[in-house]
Every structure is written in structure tokens, then in C-alpha cells.
Image (spheres, rainbow, N blue to C red):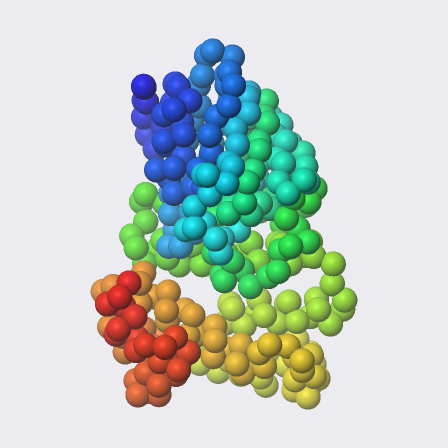
Length: 304
């Protein structure tokens, strides 16, 4: 078993070490099958975490690998996995569907389901993002052929490649914020790929706008309506019948950011985190947090 490290990149010379390195990077486990690499196995891996977002750039030899029911981890449920092709060609098979992933290709995979991958010598990026950070139903995109030459996809791939190499240099706060930024860009990219009515597209833009502006104290239905050139009445009509009203979206988004910071920002007090995300009254924040998550913010931080 042999691994050589050059800077942040691990060069791996046998299949078993490769499997172990992928799992150690926090990625969903895969198992090599057959004669991977034609007897001259050589692979590379650089990985990093940005808060709850995990990223890796991988170079793999030609061959097959798979994930069956025995290798599925409960910890991967609730995540979305993106593959972004850089060079070579991969064929991904899941749930009876096949995706051909070439250079600049994009594929969305469920990391908690069986998967088979057949590759030439290839290089690709992968990102593992909690679905709650994306806020999209990706059923229609999973195992669907996606052209990665779109400008937004190219931007996402470039940012992810830079981020994975920069992750070891970031402190916890920088990493946490960078992970949130990547998740927000991913949401924007994937939302454009989903079939939408004009109202759905506008709702998606408004949700993305809210996510970007959560720290602004004047964020409210009136400011959101003005930014999107609609009346407040029209704004409320857009979200009639949706799970959350506009005001509830703001409140939920801010509470989620507080929840993330309680884990990712251990040096900040509960009150400081609450104030950062628009809850200047500690007693009011405490009531809201407990009603939303079933325990106080202090208890949540201690339990995590």
C-alpha cells in the first residue's frame, strides 16, 4: 500500500488505498471492481471541507467502481452530490438511468443510493452539499444529462476547483462562509436547469435574493417587492399556497443561519450569533429557536 503526498494532492498507487482515501475525505464510499488501471494503478485526490460542504478533485485511472446497498451510509442521506467533469469520460448509472459525463459535464447524484461508475482515465470534481442548504427538489435533475458548458456551470466548476485547494488555508469562520456561498451559487445554477413557469422562476429568484440578504436588517416583504419590481400584494400572491410565506422564509432562513453558526462558530456567543442574523432581542430569539428546533440555542450547541 503506497501513498505519496505532493502539496495538498495525494498520489495513490493501489486500489485499496484509493478506496480508503475517498472514505477518509468524507465522500460516499465506492469500491473498485476488476482490473482498475490495467495493472498500473495511479490516482490522485485533493479534498477539503467548507463548513457542511465537502469538496474533492479526483484523478482516476480507467476502470469500474460501484456502491451497492452494503456500502450506503446513513450519514449520506439528506445530501446532494454533484459531479463536474474536467477531463476524460465517465458513465454514471443509478436507478436504471445512465449519465455520460465528459469534460465540462455536470451530473447530480443521490449519494445514499447504489451507483456504478465506468471511466476512462479521468479527472473530475465532486461536491457533497446538504439538501437543506439548496432548498430545491432535485428529483428531475438526478441522473439527467446536463450540458456543463453553460456559463453558470463553468463558473461553479471554477469556484469549486479553487475552493477545494484553498480549504486547508481557511479558518473555521472563512470556511463556513465559503461553504454557504458555494451552496448558494449551486442553488442558483441548478434552479436554472429545472423546468419552471414564470411565477416559479420569479419565486426562485426571490428565494435566492432572500438567502443573500439575510444579514441586512431592512430585509422585509416591502424591500423584496421593490427589488423585484412588483407590488407587495403581488409578492404575497406569489407565495400563496407555498409552504412558507415571505416573512416566514426570512425568519426560517435566519434561524437556519443561526443554527449553522452555533456549530461552525464556537467562539461567538449565542447572543452575538442571534444579533448577526437579525434577532437583536435575545429573549425573542430564544423563544423562536426553541419553538422551531425543540430546544434552546444553548442546548443545541452543547448537544452538537
